[in-house]
Length: 611
Image (cartoon, rainbow, N blue to C red):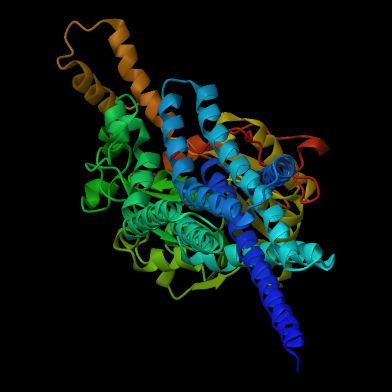
């Protein structure tokens, strides 16, 4: 073989190897860029709800940014693509690693202004920061892809190189699309995922530095920059839990540090760490608020819980994805009315009950008090939440190990899938779902879901659901009632958890607490004390809806032997007397359907708060 032929073969092999390198780099870099955008979209979904909206907007703005970046690359071409790639990767590395922390900080900083009712400024700070981050990563990616095409074209004059680089870019996006929901979100916090991804960009930046032609002085400066970035990211990984706690405390305690900027910037060391665990579906937070609510001094006038057992947990609050679920100090005002009022109203105790949601075990705690109930089928999506409810000492002290009752049969899976495919019949169906903050949860309040639930219900049975917003008679009530009627239920009855608005013993206590001696008080001071009681009774008022195929003719059922802390026979009568107006005619525009969702009704430009 001649030297000329041998040279051509080696040259061809080197060219082929170089092309493979470019294709591999494209796959990796495309994965990194899309991962950054998915991290931003998921963070937005957690901090501002509306998951579908924010994923769509994030990807749309990202692609627009890529288009602008490609145009800028065309306008300002370069003869040294490896040098430009190095600079692009370094910037991408820094922006990507900081994207999630920056969003959390913008959210906390925005809430600081919300304390002063500057809602527009709050939204500008948070959403403006988000779109700047999305656009920046899109712009840099728009620079990145043409650079990779240019580098690919230097290895071969074949026209297929450009197509293969583009194909590699799509493959990289596919890998990120699979890895993010299936591997990263269930197992890692978002800050760590961002740092790991940024580390990949940094590695490619170092590779580009090796391939580029820099002077020794320039190369040393860039190596120092890479080392500094690497050290910063390693430090971030080591202290990632502290960083996460920093932002979690900002979320749950922003009201306590909003007026003092120095305190706002601090770590809030006086607040205990928030217990957080994560599942494939949500962040589960158990937050202890040592100060509690301003009305806590009135608890013992309305509930016997702490009078009978002072060791019961106080001031613990459960949040799912940042949305309030319950306070340990007040949860019985929700769960007792939820469980017992429908039984009283229906006139009999159901024998076979389906409970969907309620993974904390508190609703089931109330139901297992009835010996007449022979079986409770419990369906919950989140295995992690149920496991926590069975093992966490705070939650087990609250639910009294109800999930371990032999009559409880727990299934893990999607509620919609279960209700559609089940063939069992139930005397009662309890739906304890989070408020529909996105279209995924909206399915569980849809006409289709209620249709399947009605098919699973015995002829003289009932369905009961919590109805957030009902206490204010807002548009949600119209959606709930119209949707249930459209699903075929003949009788739909809303109710609110009522306690007496005035108690003489509580009134006297408030007067002494506010004004000390009750001698020579002005009428306005008496009015203030009375308003405190009214405000307390209103704050614990929550909404529920009962749906039946026919109205029960049986007398009200009340078993004095069932242990309750808040709900008395008098309060039950008060609740049943204060009926809300029923809906007489179905309004199709208010029916929530999978095909045409009317939930959620919350605004897009609305950031989540803990309170």
